[in-house]
Amino acid sequence: MTGIDCHVQSYQVHPSGELRLSAFQRFFETASRADCDRIGATYSALLQKDVVFIITKIHYDIKAMPRCDSDFVMRSWSERVGGVIFTRCFDATASGKTVVSGYSEWALMNIKTRRPERTSTIDMPFENMLLMPDYSFVRRIDAEGATFAGDRIVYESDLDQNNHLNNSRYADIAIDFLPIEMQKSPRNATFIYSSECRLGDKLEINTRCDANSANVLINNTTSSKLAFSAQFVY
Image (cartoon, rainbow, N blue to C red; front, top):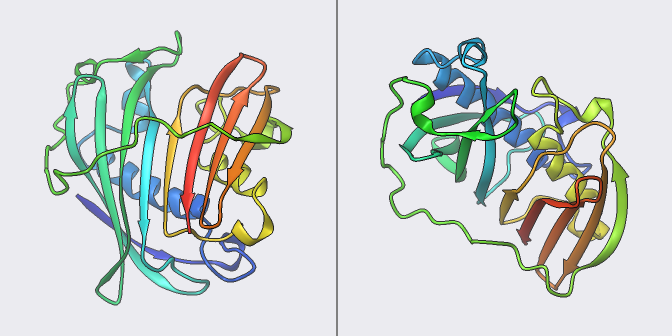
């Protein structure tokens, strides 16, 4: 388990002052990278084996999203490892109280074939801490009733070193296509990453909004695959 001190800057928040979910996810990934580095699973070490970590699912439970100019501690730990899945959990605490918590699943992707690899590909001492043994993900985000909201191209500024759309950018894209009253921090959110998006890919965004929830599905019309789906509950 590794914790990092975080400070919320004005460029990381909504106009309301709440930290954007995409920015929160970057704090989580910074803590996760530090935790992996601690056991020798550095980005460079993974590249030597032609693999990188990719996120496949993440869930957030939000009691109070940190606000501009506030401080919190982000902790990330390896919950369970097996098969093709690395389960990683996290929490954020401010003034000794948990404000956000959640869990995520990751896989290894071969950077040459762009296909998944088993966890045994890297022989590194990931823990099985089992601090959240009852976690569970929805199997899929319901697409019934979703309607076309717009489309978007993947630009160079969306990419990361893995040469695909960075996973935190999906949250911004999804929220951008929601009604203005839903462009804020939810009470909980679930993201499912189904396939990667590359430079120049065309994305079709479909949404279904109810009084207190919204589902977003992003189809990659270039590859003809579902890329990402999200559920927000307010």
